[in-house]
Image 1 (tube, one colour):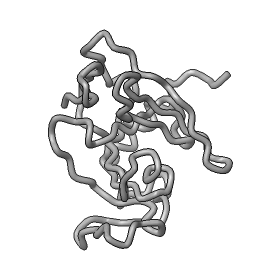
Image 2 (cartoon, rainbow, N blue to C red):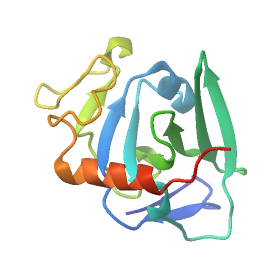
Image 3 (tube, rainbow, N blue to C red):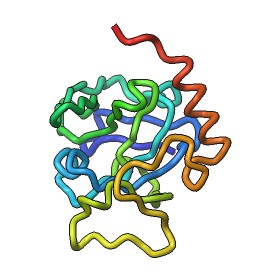
Image 4 (cartoon, helix red, strand yellow):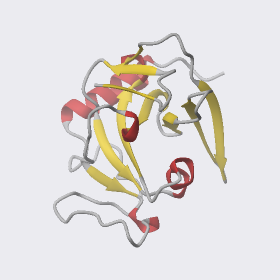
Length: 158
């Protein structure tokens, strides 16, 4: 899957399918996307390949005690991906709207802060917060294996 920003200064490719796709209704995703929720394609950071010479601008977001990092285009400002404190920089959450193909969430998270007009389909799992790590309803053995491998390979934080 390929994607990029609105002005095409940043183009990238995910070199494998995402581990998981979520619809995140947390307040951080709502604020960062300016929308009712974000669609995030969870993928290992080393499986994102840059296709253009443009470099994303990195930024840090603090919401209470939660710190996330993200990347956006320095020219048009489109948010490209973010991180989550549970996964550090090993896993990126690519914003679904930046992808050339449309993707649908495998599950919806943080529905406790879901915008009242955002409807979650009955046949898609939803959770008031984050599902527990290793929850077999969400994380297949393959997905959990990819997450574990990415976490084991990451460098210790300075």
